[in-house]
Image (tube, rainbow, N blue to C red; front, side):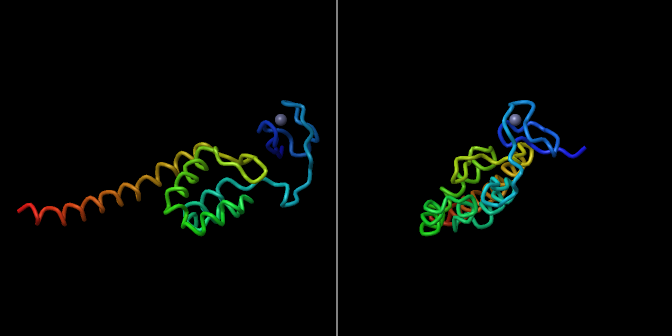
Amino acid sequence: MATQKCPHCGAEIPADATRCYVCQEWITQNNTNENTPPEFLATLLFAWFLGCFGIHRFYTGNYATGIAQLLTLGGCGIWTYIDFVMICFNKFKDAQGRFFSDYNPNVGITIFVISLIPLGLLLILLFGIYMAVLIPRLV
Ligand SMILES: [Zn+2]
């Protein structure tokens, strides 16, 4: 049987249910885009690839902070990376204060760990450059 996730408590309920049997909240069956919370994976990918331009914030309706990130290149990447980590752990809210309805902790934690690899390589590279500059001066 087809199921859907309750937007209020996240429980798996029949797709045609009009009321959640877990939390007793009514389910509105309208799939208009303005009322659908942003998708977790799409937001995560926007933050990783286009986060310096604040695209993930525009996508989630946070326009003011999106423009601020666009102008500061994501706070030199630091602000964007904080957003990225918050998205990975479902701490990020859209403009209406909602969390992702389709959040998957396995995906979030896996992508967070993968994101540490290029960061680690970058640190090794910077350390390498630093040593390459420093060592000739010591000899
Ligand atoms: Zn519910």
